[in-house]
Every structure is written in C-alpha cells, then in structure tokens.
Amino acid sequence: MLHPQLDREKKHLVEFRHSMKKFSTTENTTFSVVDFSKPYAFGRLNNDIIVLLSSLGITNENFLKKQNEYHDWITEASQDAAKAVDFLSCLGQYPLAETVLLKGLDDPDVSSKLRKFQNDELGKFRKGEKPRAPIIVHKSRLLFGVCDPFQVLREGEVFIRISVARRGETTPIHGDVLVVRNPCLHAGEHWRLQAIWIY
Image (cartoon, rainbow, N blue to C red; front, side, top):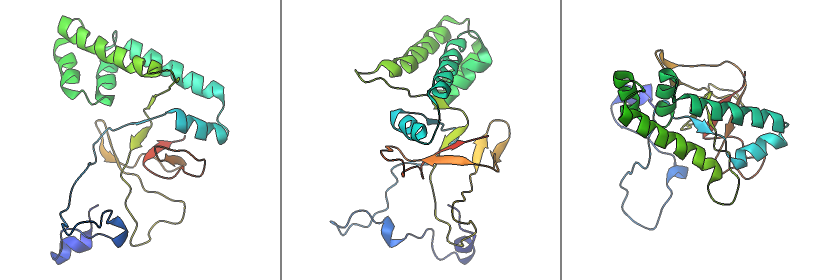
C-alpha cells in the first residue's frame, strides 16, 4: 500500500508489523514477494463459499440461476466476440482475447483455442468425484487487504479500489459487500481476500 508519509520522509521504502514475520528459523531477513495484485482478478464461488452463503440465507434457486447464467455466458463466447473477449480476460488469457479482436471468431486457430478454454472451464464442474461449482463472479475481485493505520474506517467498513474496463481505477460501490477467505470452513470466516458486492 502506498504510504504518503513514508514517501515524504524518504527514510524507508516499506514498514512491516511484527505479526507479518512468518518464519523465525533463520537469520536471513530477505524480503520475498510470493504474489502481487493484478487487475481484473475475479473471485469465484466454490463449495465452501456456497455453504457459507447458504447458511446466511441465500437460496438454492439463486445458486442454480447463477450457475445457469454462467454456463450460458461460457457457451455464448463462441458466438459473440465481446463475450469471448470478456471470457478470456476473466481467465487472464489476454493475448488470445486480443487475437479475437484482430482475427475474429471465425479464425480456425482462435476458435480451437477458445473451445479448449470453454471445455476446461466447464470441466471444472466435473473434476473428481465431488460436485463443484467454481463460478466466476463478475461483480467481485480477489483482493489484498491492508491495515488502516490512521483509523479512517469504522469497524465493519472496507474501502475497495479496483480497475474497471475503460474507466481505470475506481471505487465501484457504496453499499454492502461480502468479504470471504478461501478456504472458508466456518460461517464466521467471511472477512477477507475475496469481495463480492451486493446490489
């Protein structure tokens, strides 16, 4: 997170809390990056989150409706270039999404690669013996949470800043969000990592 005060003082590049040190078996204090924020990284429903939402009162009909809409969206990516670009972008396949715009869906190479990603995505519902529902939620993001050292936010509040196509960085909502972690094994664990906004 950018910290204006650190930028002004020019003494430190970054600060860490003691709780952020995860390993103490070595004297090596090298800073390692294991992941980083990416734009348009959408969250997914999965079995754990569905169980959590169900315990909070979301009906099975709503989940089935969301799943059917998701399957239709994947299928329609073969016929609609805009939906194909959207689908491929959600999967992080930006070079192929660009090729769709340049060559169109009738190009044999494009249609073959697109069909592979469609099959892979639908195959996730049948992976193994356990039924799954790995639905990408468009009104969601995978997020990195940071603390609020100046205590600007009240308890229960979050500030979300995301990238939106053709609009850049934006704060999309002023309302309720569900923030969950993954894995999410208890109804009390709906507090971090994946934000799904509720209109």
